Image (cartoon, rainbow, N blue to C red):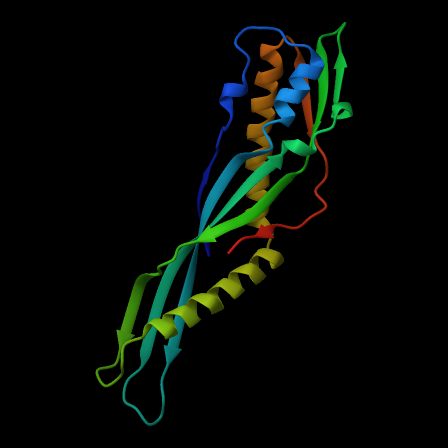
Length: 194
């Protein structure tokens, strides 16, 4: 399994006000209305290997395939509460506590890429059922690895937090406030969508 890419998604940029000042309640309502906002995504390449040899047949069957699994990190802004925004009108500052960053697996490639294949001359090629079994075993292995090694989730979460901070600092700056951005702790594991 290897890290392939992290890309940031700055959705809902139309939410940025056009040089007009808004009151704190209006600003809160605009942010909350966005619902889920994706700040980072990545593709992770998973490699799967199948090897078999039988004493009664000549030659081996070795096949290595790969496919990408896709993850994203988002903030559910519909969970934002009015008291998560603490405004100081005199100092023109706002302390923002955003909902937690949530990571989820959003899908995987339908087809596997053939990386290597060595099928003995007297052995049959892999059929579609065998390739599907390889992929299912690889997917189960991937999910176990994600639970045992949170590195990818952490990279994705860190990237999303960094992008969210910059995004919301810009939002509030456009409305005349200096913002300090924090996040509520996450109390759920990654969601999985197959």
